[in-house]
Image (cartoon, rainbow, N blue to C red; front, side):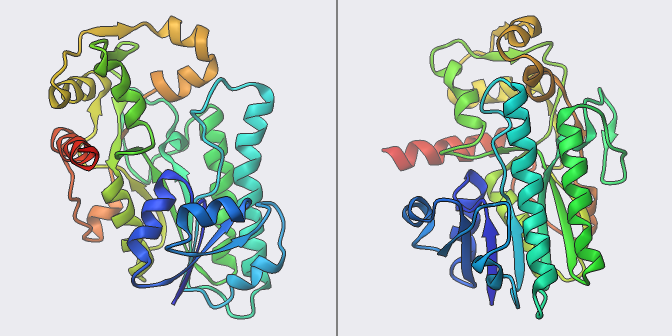
Length: 310
């Protein structure tokens, strides 16, 4: 059984390939096949694509067990200039359209299409508890998610089971947000950003991969799923837990205006905004999280990181 993955060289994609490779024939679509072969070549057969148009790669979609689209520029890589915002948006919409075009062309449709989205869909919502039925919010991230999800819904018209995963902050060693969040704590400068009262909806990398696999392998899963741990925390509580696990104090606070001066709109939507998101539909379908509590999740992740570097 073949699974086609875009974004396979990213933080989530690499772990997903490692998890699936023993049970599936994996195909990783990459804009730089040579580089991708060095990263995931031991897990997947790498095929080049441009992330925008159909081409010879489109044949890999035909008859696939699933197509998982994780492609997209990192939204937190730096200040959002107009050009950067255009790159972030187009990297996602072009990739999604290209995949759907390939599915439409395929005589033997894939069984499942999974499209990555994010909890940025909900915008900044203060203390409101958000599940999959909650309406879209406002802002740049919400607009990106809304547009990508509209494209992904085309799969239903093509007769393909479709799943949209709205992912929170993914915590794991070796990539993603956690190493950046840990850095000031290593120098005894750890603390929250902004007021610290904004909600921080997270998921461990292990549960993120387990959830995607669950959705691939569960034919009853269809539509939107929040991929966040069942117990969101405030930013202040998260930083306190991180400090405790690292043996450091969480005592500083970076004011919002400082972040806005440095990062502009990106600070408001990525660091200072908050969403209290719950994975209602995953729970209804019987998915069991390994990491529900952020303290125990951080303990396992960070101890594992230390053990691996010893």
